[in-house]
Length: 299
Ligand SMILES: Cc1cc2nc3c(=O)[nH]c(=O)nc-3n(C[C@H](O)[C@H](O)[C@H](O)COP(=O)(O)O)c2cc1C
Image (cartoon, rainbow, N blue to C red; front, side, top):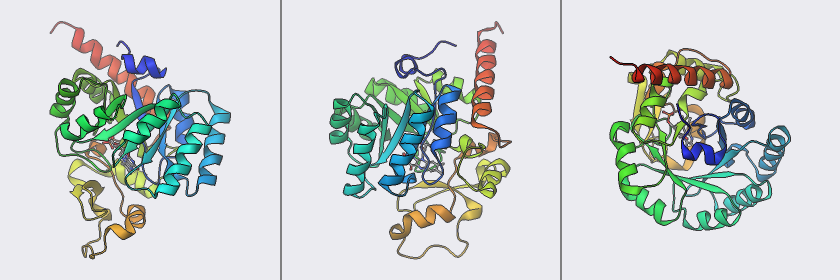
């Protein structure tokens, strides 16, 4: 398998991003991802305060000089905190900024002035056009079935459609749990695979063991797509949703809810074990190589 140009630009061995996951991605995953040759990331808010984010960034910088990314949830974060987190990304020369839930224009300009690469989350071509107008280096195409806040469009259509319409690099997000889906995503025009749910079941992930095991034990039918947890549609493990339903003040307690109600995508169906992040990547890529070789062989 040849490397994609975006992969080469970022200096990655494999075309995979360990996608940011609220509350559960951590600095250990960033370093394990760097060692595995992929791009590790986390939301800045996973460090509860800017001081803790500073400590995390210093910890990562001491352990690797390979690229990594920080996610700023621009539309959901208090402006003061956002400013402090961006300033830390600048100070620590974070190579990749991932923006989600808002208009990225001013952040793209500021990040580019610091030499950062910026990718923005989109679920539609309308979102995608705004992101391209803002000058992003690529769009994260969040398909139906993805963990976290997911879109409604099948990955079969979303990636090639956005590629055709936007003509910028595409990061394929949604239901990539094994090597077959890596090859399929690249075949559909993706430049990188943006993988969340598979890495919940990694040794390094900050999720509690019961959460990891539930990801291993669940199938796609155990996933519910609802806006009742935070006001924006996202995928959750059905068993963790309150059986009595939700009260009216849903978004006010968003963070607390994500702590108790666990998000995962339909890709749970193909996750069979908890193992080190580096082993997940090696297994995914050797399966991808095998599938790719098989496609080349005459029928
Ligand atoms: C538990 C969980 C939390 C997430 N939190 C965030 C987040 O804070 N910011 C963000 O941009 N995306 C978030 N996402 C979405 C992921 O970055 C990524 O788009 C998604 O996991 C890809 O789909 P997959 O889970 O099917 O691999 C989250 C996903 C999960 C599963």
